[in-house]
Image (cartoon, rainbow, N blue to C red):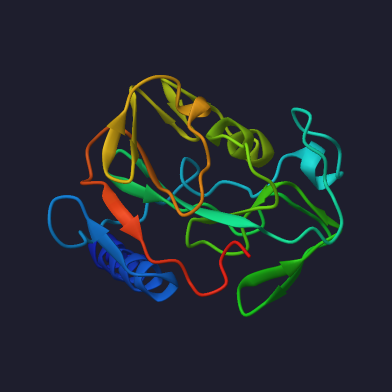
Length: 200
């Protein structure tokens, strides 16, 4: 596939669509789901955890706890320059992590917001968290002009509606569909059908 970058992007876009529909069906704000290529390269292939999370240390006052059950879940989608940036599985899970079938099944401890796969489902072990907490645990920047590996004006949509202000202040509410974009526009989804048992 090295000689066919267009084919590789097409396969990546189809894979994203299949993965997105496998974890839950999505409906777009402006019609049906739009196949969007998955970004490649260092701006898109980001690690699941920074050094403090790997060590199980507190991050912005958030502790890594043992065997805390998820009580809620939200879905987060990121787009940088019209390409999907998939959240890695294992955000908020301190190593050594255990995986089975591409899903992180456990680790030394978990932070209050964590991912087990690349679907964008964020599981929460407590209420009152915000997007800024998730990005702090992930170790990636989030501001009105920064979105992980992307720079520019960041647009935020919650359940398909544009939300102004600091993206880090957006609350992580039960079954919310949160879309963040920088450097382009992808019609934001209004809803996400969560897999059974998501969030407790």
